[in-house]
Length: 289
Image (cartoon, rainbow, N blue to C red; front, side):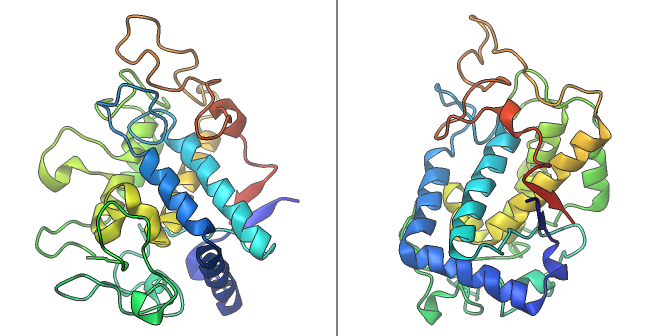
């Protein structure tokens, strides 16, 4: 049966509570931290010599689609009615937005240590200790908008610019790809400072705190952010049905700098053996409202 991922602003209070409770239960069972470890393990950059699947690569979108599905299945083992909602950051674009409500994701971090003190994922409430991290912080942190180094959330125009590109990705298949939908959505540019980061990357930096870097999954809003990114990929697919839905469709040849470093259409993406080609059509699993 096909289920629906809803905009978080359209969730009922009961749906919000069910999602939060399922996330907290995964944390209590120790299952949530396994997702954090996976993301840390696969948070590698252009300079990595091995196969790069999660970031700065064409498989950024299918890898995270699979990651979302695995998390959603874990939630549904707790409560079969729960799905991952999405956060449209082009509309709900301030710290006062509903996504940051006390009964949902909680609010911004406090001054000084940036510790989140409100909501169900506040360390002070005893249900959300950060135990898998790249630093020694044990509490969720946020610094929305980064007042000391200001950055804004992407706009609808930024999204439209990415969606208009009819090509999925281009060589050299990394953070320096000058065009292609994948990199326009992932958000790497050649600019300096905060202008270096667009769309997906820009959102991570706007939230800041633990949403920066490999341990970003420690902030549950990670899933809502990536569900929206996934919905944008779905919209791009629908708008460009005559384009190749994933590139490269064959592995870069021997002698190419990206040989063995990026996943082609039928290359398994660790830690699963799922290929990008198997994830191009989600219509039999879920849809977006």
